[in-house]
Image (cartoon, rainbow, N blue to C red; front, side):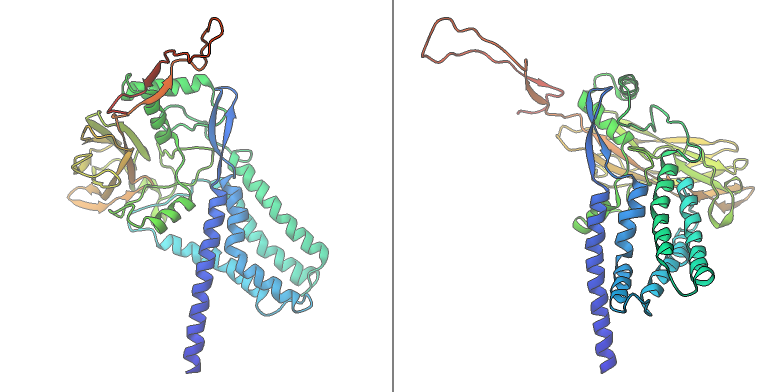
Length: 444
């Protein structure tokens, strides 16, 4: 009976820690995903930028939040034991670090579905953190076994603490490109928009959008397309809150693909795959399929939207991959025609496209989206078929911008003057012109 009571009490404690940790992590994720408005002196406009660098946030607040229980346990044990290490504190911290290094890494690798691959995009930051993780264990051996066995002196503790800001600075330098090579920023599709983008660059981007979507679209619609094609993925806090408060946000079980941003507002684009594939097989030995873009914007009046699929790696054999649409906030039949099919690549053919029909209606709606996913990749070697692989961008998001915009009401002039002759106690009437710009659908 006592064993059962202890077990139930232990389960109750674990549930309490899980609830508190979830709220604590959600609060930290809200802080690290905070944004601010920054004035761009070149364009004379305000842009939204991150307050926290993602790498710095993960190494500081996020790491503190996930390691808070064992750190507090060690501190409480030290203060109650005359600053002598007990049986729980150090063992808990080192054990947690070892668990993260080995078990979590193993689970992440084993959780990848068969036929799919995952890539380490920020290899510079990964190399820095991996080196420091190994050095941490080496440093513990040095100070606890060689220099002062079983004793941590003040100078050793200070040096150990100094390693942390050094790690954060080096990782930050690797993240922003001070350490290691970085690819040049591309303009147009797949570009990054920063607070330092010039007016000429913004004009070129707007011209490219109007060329693809029509010259008669409003400036508000141009801004929406810019936001879709050049905006960063949602943060962990966004997805956590979505799952918590809107569990049926993605009824089809498909969520928009995500990547960890390294700049201010990037969109992930993999034009060429160069990393290793799953199961230790290089991509030159496998056929990997990807969408070209993580998200595609289209006007409601476009009729059809073109989606491009590429393959890389093993190109000398014919290959095929199937695709299908999935509902999001846009509903099949009402907002787009459900589409499913198969793309067949000839030998040495690297790109195929297909179209999805967009349904035009007269309703004034918010921006809606649906998803297209790739599945069943196959490589055909003679009469035999072998499984291919799906890359990071095996799901793309199609965002539909509504044409039925009610417009914006504004005055013709910001300031106006009228002349009143003589002194009068009567009210003076005058005409004021109110304009409706950037759309005129419906009655307002």
